[in-house]
Each structure stands twice: as structure tokens, then as C-alpha cells.
Amino acid sequence: MTSFIALRQASRRDASELAILADIASRGFASWLWFAGVQNGVSDTPLELGRLKMGEEEAVGGWRDAVIAEAYGEVAGVAIGHALNEGIGNIEATIPATAPMLALQKTVVGSWFIGSLGVYRHLRGIGIGRRLLDDQIERADRRPVSLITASDNEAALSLYGRNGFLEAARADAVPLFENSKRHAWVLMTRSAAQQRQETHG
Image (cartoon, rainbow, N blue to C red; front, side):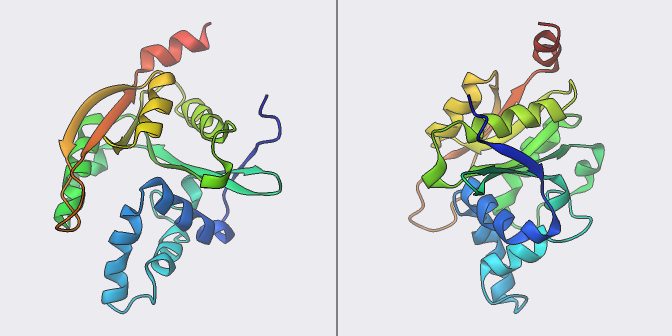
């Protein structure tokens, strides 16, 4: 049904596409964070800093953790996931806007955590997001799978809900600007029991 969609492991050369898609997945939150690099003289644009971060060799959530979907001869989407180990307990938020998400992540240590799942707008609605999500669930290897999305992102909430994810917790997002629309960060988890049940049919 979605045989025209091909998945492949990302390479360092994909860093630019990964930065764009991670920014799309976060609905601009990533580039807002990266803008600090422009202010500090590290890069000329937020996406340039994103490209540098995605190209780092050992970075968690960088190219080594990314799977790219291709369709119709072009990069169509990405999923970035990794095992969430106890080391996250030692990480402190350096800016207030990231504190609620970090706190939510600390409640699901041991999960496979999907940090980003994004598809270019002109290629949505043909199963790419579902294919990437299925691949991440498979990579979890019977661990629970967790992710965080925004409470006003109805398309994402619908996709995850249809695929066995349930809301586990939520935290109010810190507004990025004075006129920012208020929303919450929603932690969703797909249980390990469900993983095993589906594996055994």
C-alpha cells in the first residue's frame, strides 16, 4: 500500500534536511532555540546552527539516530528516536522553555523516545508519517515508546492515538513570545505490553 515509500538510515550528509524536518516537526520551536546561536555569533541563521547540530558525530538526536523516508525521488520525512537512559536525570534545562519537556522526559526513562517525526507538507496524507512511526515502534524492540507533542497539534495527536499511544502526562508550555498562543506539551506513551501483544499476534 505504501511501497513507494522507502526508509533509510540517515547519513551526516543529510544534516541540512534533518534540520529543516526537525524544525517542521517542532513547528518552529527548534529554530527558535537555534536562534541563540545567531545571537552568539556561532551561525548566520538558525537553520545553519541546526545543520551543525544534526551533523555532530556523537550527538543524541543527531543524524545517527535519524531515519529518512523518501518518496517520489525526494526526501519526504524523518523520524529521530533513541533509547532514553538514566543519564537524562543529570540534565538540567538551560532555558525555561525547555524545562517542561525535559521534566516530562525524565518520567519515561527506559522508553524508546521519538524526539522528532516530521513530513514535508506537500507529501502529507499518503502514509509517510505512519510508515516512520511503525519503524520507530519496531526499533523500540518491545520497550515502551514515548513522545511529546503539542496539545493543539490535532494531526499529530490523531496519528499517535490511532496507533496505540495514550496521554501519560502534560505540562504547560512556556510562551515563546508575549502574544504566543497558549498550549501544553503532551507526553504520549505506547506500552511495552502492547508491543508484545502485537508481536505475538
